[in-house]
Length: 138
Image: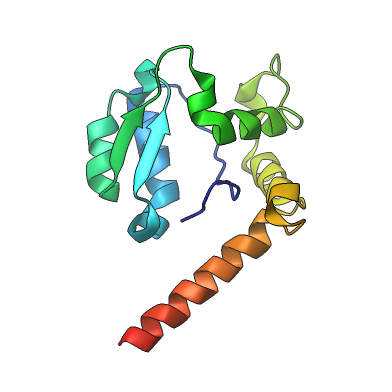
């Protein structure tokens, strides 16, 4: 459900398949009913893709090698995240607070593609409309 613009960002302590899958599952589990597909690159850190897909009940896809346009929204977000954490930065010293600050700033930045609403505003509207739709159906 976070959609193409709302971002969940976490510091993964090690770039292992176990650490990445644990982090992805913990971040996305609260939204599992709305997570239908996941698309990643072909990195070995996604070796537990079947576990992630099963835990979230989602389809898991891999982009073609050297085809970053297949994950355009992700590539754009990576560039925005780099404003806070430059490429040569040592990630060992990044704190949870720094990650939370970057996530907050990025999700509260107005976007042209959202009619100059913030990803947070759009996300909350989606949550509210889904909550009301579910309430009306019961």
